[in-house]
Length: 337
Image 1 (cartoon, rainbow, N blue to C red):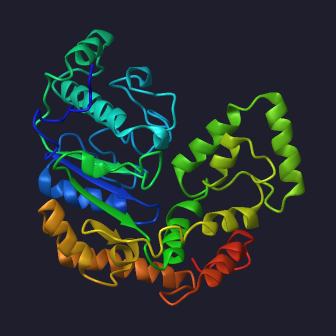
Image 2 (image 1 turned 30 degrees about the vertical axis):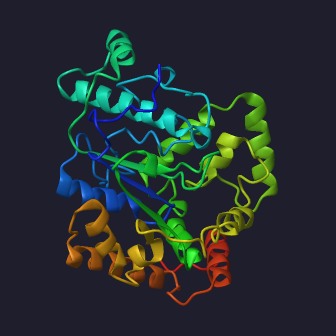
Image 3 (image 1 turned 60 degrees about the horizontal axis):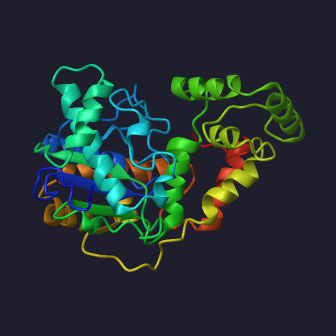
């Protein structure tokens, strides 16, 4: 079957509102603000009880694989194209099919099915070119310039697409990511505690021995922070307690998009997160057809600048300043919050 012409509403993708963004770039809030205006099919805004927003496709393009950490209670990974292949290697046709599969399953679930059974999934697979989803849908992803084709999102015909990346001052965006996520500890955030405990419980005896040996040699003797989860998953025992290594790795590739050509749908993350220009609002109006509340956005940006200041940083801080601060932070030598 040729899936190259699969669309969400039978004609084009004009009911899809998509934001691809870097970590720390404020993409979750962007999607939340957008969703308040367009009222999409299935969207859960971020709250103090939820670690992140949930888009109309159950965040399937945020995880490294279809499913990943996302609980797919409406469809199983094996029903998607190339579900065992990392997302960044998928073709645009894989995404067309997978997005439509998820959106249709979502619409069925919302019409009364707690879980979409396999018979319904078989029906979707066999009739996907005949099925439409006409409600607005929001999608978020972290896949810029990945894969063999660079994910030309413009091939999703007439979709409403913006990208938010650090085209300048990327170390300030990475610092916001550090502050808002990577400094989270199990003592302060219940879901971090759950995640870390669950990861440790899944280790076999040999892995536990390797973990304890590594922690014994490191300066950080415990599994405390959210960032340690990734090293546990990768079984990189030598890094799980090495705070300097972690900080250096986080900042090593922060400038990857600096100097890249921007397009009419490109928002510089530093403008959006810290309010260095009004271009994010004008681009959103032009591409998405939505007017964000400028007062509300300005308040968000003011709080982000204040958060930098609480950590002894500001908009003129260099990459070296930021690295030095976070290394000291994890050694508990310098904490301003």
